[in-house]
Image (cartoon, rainbow, N blue to C red):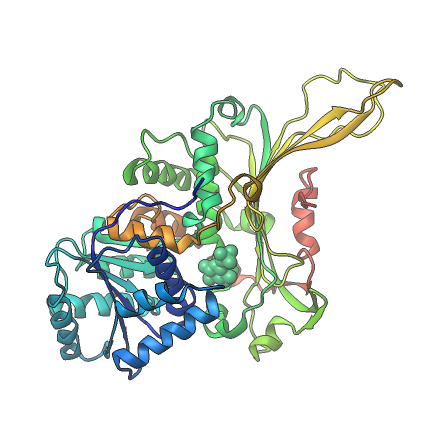
Length: 492
Ligand code: BG6
């Protein structure tokens, strides 16, 4: 069985603006390589690297080879050369409109006049609008062209509007692909299939049977070389506004009529719009922000966030926990607890749906603990699902309860390599399939919910609570659940 999509995609000029940056070399180039190996890149497909750095085609091709050697294990030499043969490079300055005519000249040279033009903006968000304007002025944009933007789309609602307006002045909404790479993860797409291609969960998937939902995205990495960006962002903007809210949407949304761009995104939008708005008191009570101090991660001593950054005065959070509510018929009264942090004890992205206790205690004299049923959906690593149940331990001696689990490990069922999120997303861009991308109204609805939290945090003197690196976060996050008589589910 294969986990890759063999569907052919049209030929394409895949222009990466920011071609010498980390995203391009660590994620996009390897993703294109894997699609090359699968034979998914059509005959006249070219990869055009654009950035300010001076390179010839040949010297940039060497950069691509080095990136593949670094980021792809056991790369196939022939496939590397097939991809490299498609690579071209232009040194362009976004500030110089005339430079961009060179790109137009190169695009016109494609042997397939119908080749789709993709412009992937792997640059700072402040450049999205100006680069779109340059592309337009230079005549590069055709009706079948598409533009791809990475998050963050803005830093608040007003700036997100401004970015969307600027890009929207050149590209129609159906040509704009806003990437949230979590939506390209196999296990995240499987959430849709688990919920909607099976029937047994649906009757239970509501406030009558679900006690609460937990969504955790924890990382062991610190901010590394991204301190300048991260310190102006923080965990709320960097992770919650996009990845965690998207996961929440997929858990909470109603069944879409079809799996197509509009149906799925309409349903996700309704969830975002149903999130209970936070008053200042709600923010004080239902959010926790933390920041890692020195500690041990994977046995190695690591510095604190401010030491990593070299800015002792920073008040940026590297950890957030939030108690959210989706105010609709299905989820009324069911808390959704979200948490994410850097420099935690482990790398784990997981959704846990905790079901209610049985309504009647039938086994008053049993031995052992009866815990509520829980469905753990592990997004990464070790993608899979576990349903925790209670079973009777075999043998005489009354009812002895034993927690057991039904385990589905993707690795044991599907033997293939798990494709990286970008592989699927890049091919969807070329094919013009928007389902796994964020629509403008979704991005703006997410900011609308986040903004009161940002505003409240900005005026409260309290600083983020310290947690030692290599732990599961500040104690205040544990108290957020204890207050409700619950605890975070820590997977074994
Ligand atoms: C990015 C964030 O969007 O997602 C990073 O900007 C974070 O800070 C990364 O490390 C996490 O992605 P993944 O796929 O490793 O969980």
